[in-house]
Image (cartoon, rainbow, N blue to C red; front, side, top):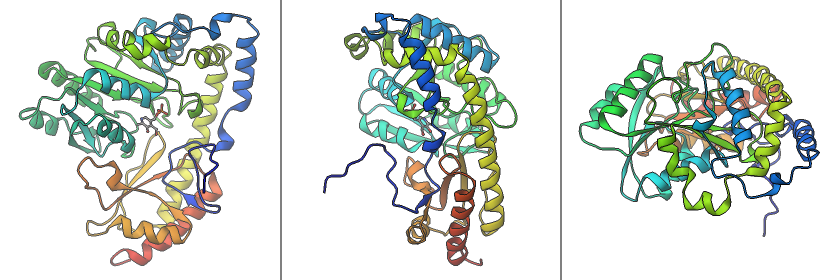
Length: 383
Ligand SMILES: Cc1ncc(COP(=O)(O)O)c(C=O)c1O
């Protein structure tokens, strides 16, 4: 039977899938987009519907640079921004233009599972580097650099997906030093940087002096709406040049100029700023609810660290537990999570699971955690 599907989300009725990292449909800002679209369309400016400038409309880049400078507490230069059709598209484009099949790249172990899919599409040789509570283990990175020459390292430095940790400031400096010494690019996926709920994160990897090796991916998916398919890459003009003047962007006239024009109004009318504060309070609340529910409902042998932002909680079960068995049982109880193995570049992490507090509101988070807690109690040794 042909499925009549409108959105990516396609859950059976009653299923609380705690693994999905997408905003609830009820959180999506239709009102803001309506106001922003009216504001922009009433300007009667036909350039909105023309092929766009390759790098992205300079006026949009200026608004975005002001917004980011305010949020990052760092100067962001509009000439250091390239507008993309989302972080995924930006990552695919970087991979297409900077690598060829068989090249080696480094990722974190664990890493964002769909970035691993993009790297597989490009037939890259992917080497995983371990992480700990302070993010990427830069000593492990240095050891791997003795035997590999990666084109780039893909890292999620702030509120990591799935591990929810943040790379410490000193490790950021060490990483930058290693990238210069060993001549590899740092592709920093910073899509959760603006979703910090308690303390401000360290400065983004793309900001500061001597950042010639960094390409930083940003996205409106997490701070406004994923359906916009709009994002940016921050980097120095030397690195951005390859992206700006590639065939895809030249032929298409920039990436997503119409949406850029409308989001420009959302920024200039202060709507994005207001919405982001709203998201902070909603997600911080949901995160607290899910953390307490886990504390009450899950066996003590499950360990995790408390996130300070982002969408995720990354949980470790005892080493001999296979999360796949738990997931099969969980589905029967109308609850699910994302398997740790999906985030591994080498088929490891069998005893890990990722939960998210982005999709469901308080009551469902509590019910989901209760259901999953019961399954875990039945399956974990010694519970
Ligand atoms: C780390 C990371 N990068 C990229 C994306 C996708 O971003 P976009 O919607 O901008 O393609 C996600 C979404 O889950 C993510 O977690």
